Length: 160
Image (cartoon, rainbow, N blue to C red; front, side):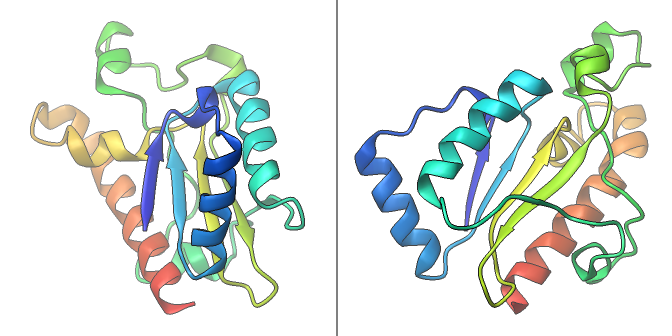
């Protein structure tokens, strides 16, 4: 299980592409999180497309079993970084305005339905885990949904 953050600026070398591909096809899982906006999405999609060109990126629909493995998660929460949220006066969640207004859960599945890559775009799910002790308001607003989604995704990946 690999977890990567801010992959919108990632640049994989040919050797890294080959090794990541081998890892994923042998049963590994990559979850990428905390990349925002159109430019970051297009950059990441091009990079992962080099790794797994034969598998499409799909939007995970709200009724997918992945979102109800343990908890009922009605949608992808938009979790901002705690720093952005504080700078916004504790109101804003979209770190790039209109260009990142909608959080997405996307994935690449193999032919048997096993997730190879999970992508949470326009959200920082991990900040809901790592910042919970810094601010009670941030915790109550974002952490429960971030944990529920994270637990669901990991449990689904481990069981498929």
